[in-house]
Image 1 (cartoon, rainbow over the protein chains, first blue to last red):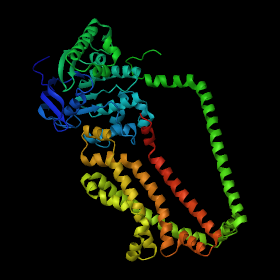
Image 2: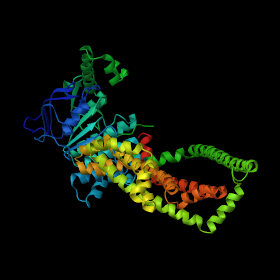
Image 3: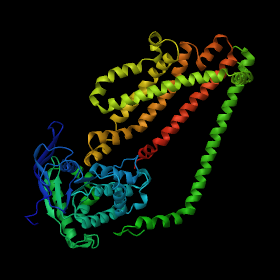
Image 4: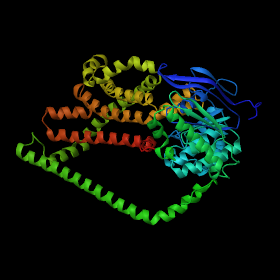
Length: 275
Length: 292
């Protein structure tokens, strides 16, 4: 990485506790995200991935350490857009109105909003569904709208909290490829939380592996495959297999280091742990 | 099915093709399901008719055994009904009752929703007033009638106060609960996109509470009918409640039943109307309950 590039997100020794300090969720987290970079946070349940995203978004404040987004303390707003595991669309508004809702929060004038909302729906292939209500859409389509809503505010950073975890395998695969396409076209930074190692390796340029209780960084791995990945699927490459094995190796070490086997097996699925 | 890759408009491409191929199989299935459903609703309706006829037969039997005082004959009730409708007694009674119901409902709905939104929005205020609201809500509305008579008299305005007192609290409590239990995920979403407190409240929490507010209104409206009749029975006799009392006092049971039937129809109509409104406005909630 070029050292002269100013990181867009920077965390230094960040810690966070809950229940008046009794539960330590995160400890000593430090990493940077550069503009336009795709970074994944991977780890079993209970390692504070979602908490980390909420800290970066400024929804909650850190107890220790320092978080800087574009050089200042983070604040919720249009520079940082969130995509959640469930789409979290306002069910009483149409798909287009849901996107216009966040455009209004960004401060766009009333005349610009409808055009922008439709343009973004076009970008995720849902232009024909602008007037539909969220409950009339499938889970995958709802998640597409969630993505369109996040992109609509033209964020510098996209924060994604297991956005594809609740979808069926086929939809998930399609949306991953679409995400890669959108990312390579728009050049925004993405922080992507997942507990699926294959997904992290497939999508991101850097994988940050977290270990649980308290959540801390176990390993940071750079992933480089020929781009664009949505055209050359890296899953057939030996490098992909290596990276996968390396990360699984780290997780097996975690298990040996005393983390409870059942918990990890539960979080990752027994079959993949054995492979 | 081949795994879809990269290119986007697959949704639109796949949609029509799939529906064409699936159409014949689906329609056979749909027809069977529809037949099943019509069979079931036919059975339900038939049983309802039978029960209605049974009730009528029971009334005739009781009338034959016990005489007109114990149970009027349905024929007399119908005759009396026609008489009361044609001479205007029923219409003016219904008018008086509807005036009290409507005024009481409008008053309790506006004050209940306004205060409910306030208590739901300001948590501390809600906590302060909670025991008082609960105490008032669990006191039977009729308990306040003597006080209301002393304060407001015996006529329409006092009756409206009785109705308001009965219907206000369910509406208030449902509104407050709806806002206090607003979907946390949606609130967090709006906050993540930079929504301020006022936007959060009016554009997310209040709309999210709408179905709950509507159920409060439906419950309140049903209580309004009850409150109106109680007020008309116990205060200056007027409206349908007054007709009820007058007929009962003179042991004119056919007249009495004619009024009861109108009250039944009125209550059912009001509830059906509000349930319809509730379903129209809260349609999205159904799909939420089914899990998305």
